[in-house]
Length: 97
Image (tube, rainbow, N blue to C red; front, side):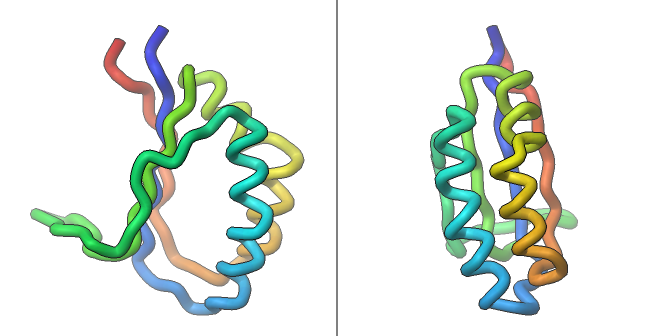
């Protein structure tokens, strides 16, 4: 079964307090959903139309698990706390089996 991944590239952080509140809730929600952070950082080399800001890569055992974690009540609370605190490109993608 192919793994699932969350890929999140931050274009702008407009409210660091909202991001901090999101991080407090999102970490436990991701772990409860079976997610593992593979990469998190600001050291990014972007090419073409890429975003050279904070980028996260989170792995799940399956694509379905990644989608379910995003839809979970716990993660939805994290998103509510984040609100308009950042501008980011967030995707859920299926890995190559």
